[in-house]
Amino acid sequence: MKLGVVGTGYVGLVTAAGFAARGHHVTCVDIDAAKVASLENGIVPWYEPGLSEIVIAATAIGKLHFTTDIKLAAEGADILFIAVGTPPNEDGSADTSAVFGAAGDIGDAVTSPVSVVIRSTVPVGTAHSVRSLIAERAGFTCPVLSNPEFLREGKAVPDFENPTRVVIGSDHAGEEQALHALYAEHTPAELIVTVDTHSAEMSKYASNSFLAAKISFMNEIATLCEAVGADIEHVRKVMGFDPRIGSAHLAPGIGYGGSCLPKDTQAVVHMGRSSSLDMGLLEQVHRVNVEQPARIVERLRTALGGSLAGKRIALWGLSFKPDTDDMREAPSLVLISHLAREGASICAYDPMAVTHARALLDGQLEYAEDKYQCVQDAHALVIVTEWNEFKNPDWKTVRDLLATPIVFDGRNIHDPNEMAEHGIEYYSIGRQPAGTPDNDRAQDVQNSSEEQKNLLQEETLEPASRS
Ligand code: UDX
Image (cartoon, rainbow, N blue to C red; front, side, top):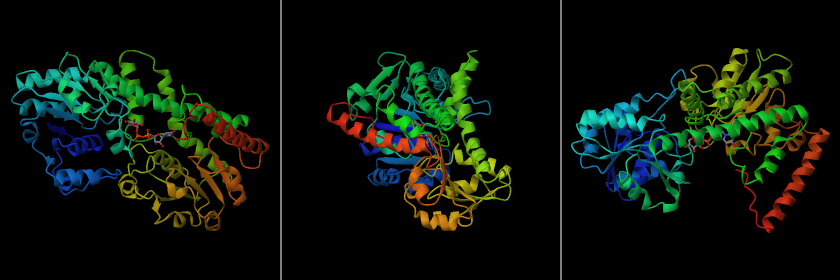
């Protein structure tokens, strides 16, 4: 098929390159000429494992093209995707100006009806409004469908290739045929779900805000565990055996970030408020998340004698999660603003995100070349993002470089007992300090749950893997 994709961001480019790699002729449109030029040269302006390879390969065989001229993409297209960003407005609502801008441009460019597919995450009802706008501008009606994406940054390419589901929103019988055929080439029919556009649009928001709720739920339980002497990692393991709960997205930590979970959760709250509904549950999900970095600062202040003024804090990790250089809504940004406000000096190291961090945090902190240089003379180290290289450092070197051997593990990637053996004063989320009787008992629980897991595997129930 001949496809057009408006928007060459995380979603648009993965979608375009993915379909081009399957042999379709795809033309990407972006208003940013510099971005179009770099993409034509196979340069993807952000890190996404495997993406630049498929962009280069598909471009080389003439299947993937980039332009600023929407008419080139619209000409003879079977399907036109709208995959532009919908960032949050101040009030938490989704800014859909780029979506309606693309729709208007499509309306002006098309000369005959073409399927228009909204891949961006948009408030419920957007497909309806886009349909009217295009009809007004084109002088004829185009089918407008919803096709929300469920791609995770860092895994976007495999998530496109092996989707857990393909959602098609269509309000007029038969209009989904072209889009359904496009996906059916590679996606088992049972994974393609066709619903009305309102439900398709809502399903994306409901999925993301539920994932956010799982994370904030665990972070709230983790805070309770700290107070009552339980270990959240053992609680999480026990919960994960229940397939109704699952173990994914149950990891406690410094909080969730990224371009989706924060904005989508707040967009749902805004949609509810606009319908005069109380969205207390999701408001609390957001509140717990916003307060999580502040809780770490509070505990850090106590560990450092009651004040952070003049203290040097090392941060391992700036990106909102590993395997991406994306800093959007990263918890590190909230942590840094709290630390700076309390007079601490900060030195950070991240394998990939420093370029974006410099643009966002001009002059607020120092950047180290590696994780060891980062901890030199620091009064404490905070592990913010669980990059692999932070999982097995040389703790003797770290301890010798730190001014005081204090480590806050914001992602619970280390074991309290092992850290105590390294002579580190170790703090983490929802767990007891090493050496407390509870913690020793927790070790017994850890061992017994390993035995239990093996037993369960022998039976049939496949225990949820630790994600
Ligand atoms: C998310 C959804 O997972 C994806 O389906 C949707 O299409 C886009 O939004 P993404 O934002 O890339 O994907 O990241 P995700 O892997 O969900 O992590 C989001 C944030 O939650 C990260 O900051 C991560 O550190 C945090 N997180 C994730 C936790 O704190 N605990 C967990 O158990 C999982």
